[in-house]
Figure (cartoon, rainbow over the protein chains, first blue to last red):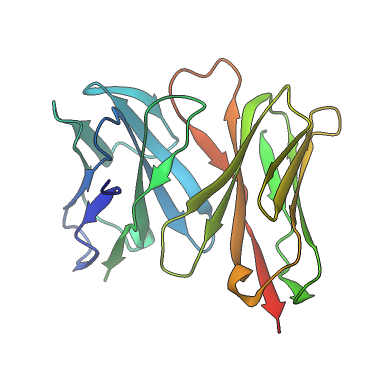
Length: 112
Length: 114
């Protein structure tokens, strides 16, 4: 079956702009999580959505937001981009707690 | 504060030997501990999950131990091969956490030399 699909794979944005990243989970997976990975901070949890509701949230400013659609697809948005937002953004999906979590290949965001 | 620590130094190992990686945590009550492999520029790939009431888990050449008293997990790659070269991440999921929220260690890079 198809894995977790993230688009776009690479993008470059300018400071102050906003960006929307998309994630299609594995079919049947209702939980979608987002993570940010940087060389300095490693992999950090952003938020998790389940059945269109945010169920968990990490310690990121309000500029980072997300949503989930009825078909479990998810988007995350970062507004007023800062240079420090340059990172690999990873989406992960799972059937439930204690089950295997599958990651997508990520979206590489560069803010200039 | 909660901490998950992995050896940040790269582990260089000869092909055929056993690589042992350590994951230590503090101020945390994990329900599950997971190990992932990550290749450069790629997303993490799930390897093994071990629950708080399990001591050891095996999968092919991989073995994970979980000691909740020592607050430590060990990850072993036996008969290592150059293809095992990657960064290995441990991640914890808290007890009684609603939903899925993994906290990751910083990862340990493994380089297996032929």
